[in-house]
Image (tube, rainbow, N blue to C red):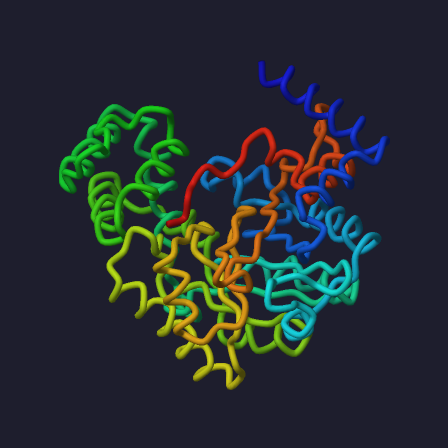
Length: 357
């Protein structure tokens, strides 16, 4: 079934690209009236060694990143963060087609693998970092959760540990059976529980099955020295909260501290203004947008096409990409598929159904 779906996707994207219909759809849906912003997470040498321990949609190889950057570089002018601020009007629309490259979460492998490619191509970018983790050996909670659950589900005793962890938080509506595998379980927990409860689940599972420090080391964050060097080479630093909670699930006081504190910490350590913000998981609502506005950010980024009518500059859509997001039925990079993604064609089939209110 999956093979048939990939064949259909490849055929439709190719037909739309050859006829120019993908670009026409982008114009009709006003996608072409916004900056093209591409988003990535981890950049690794080869994704295959990481597939057993990492959320697949977080991984992009150096080779695939270079394919994407070459594609966007031929079609748009890639601009730096400060120039993007000046190009956008109050509605968040640029005067001419431009693109921006972003990286979320602040993984060290962005410095190791993405920065050399950006320097070679002369492309600026923005890296959104979780400020409490910079310069530490800490690992983001969603990575710890996925890794712990993936390890636990390989044995009956580990599965029982996951059930005990869910019973400990006792949230209404959260199924206690770890059905659907590690990825489905991770998504369910992250989109249902506030961060304090997610942490309890992770701590409970890790206490039962142990922690593999060697596997966790792959998720190391950037250091302050790395961030300073990236800034010198045209990579702006943006805020991504202090600890990466899903803001729409947190109390108002927590949201304020996360968005204000992150900016304050980064500016104090880096000595430069931080004017860009990315919502964790791209999730936002009216309350969180107002908190971001109150924190003084100039631009903020989501992961869907919805924009807040009062704050369009603080709800800029992005296209999140990963290793297999733009490949055809034969696992090759596909320019037509990437074009359909950028033009919002696939959003017609699978639109964001959240109201964000």
